[in-house]
Length: 204
Ligand SMILES: C[S@@+](CC[C@H](N)C(=O)[O-])C[C@H]1O[C@@H](n2cnc3c(N)ncnc32)[C@H](O)[C@@H]1O
Image (tube, rainbow, N blue to C red; front, side):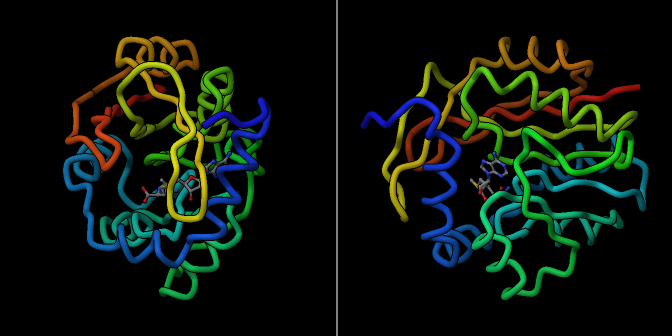
């Protein structure tokens, strides 16, 4: 499926806005145990962390259980509203990952699970720099899909844009944004057959 260049984020968010309740139900029971353990080992206990592209905020609950103070951020108003309906207690902000409405060094960590994969490739490094800016010193968790190129995929709610990455290219982007990669591992393929690529990175 082809869509106009420049519509990647708006088209994807419109798709999530139309399918927030179904997304929340389908994904509610997944617990990213390895990622949570790796993130918890990297970020000081009790600190403020940003769930960057939180969706309905399932991971905010896990991060709070670990003793962190999560803040949810998503551009889809319906995803955040669905989170609140399902009991999300973390503060929630509707904003674009590419322009975070937070001061420099205001968080100790950022958790970006399955969110930056919806940005055009050209936005990856600037968005990682934006995350580095609000973290100052701390850690980032990133989950993307491994593969080549980009595609619009038909999903609940309509087409969503996906950008796929090779792990070495992601490592290079993360380093370019000022982080050091401390862990990386592959995950099982999702419904579209692409395996997950997981990284933890630190700015010291
Ligand atoms: C696959 S969902 C992942 C949700 C959650 N992090 C999880 O792992 O279940 C992707 C989320 O990223 C959000 N998103 C995509 N592009 C965004 C952008 N430019 N700014 C903020 N949120 C964005 C979508 O609205 C959606 O909630």
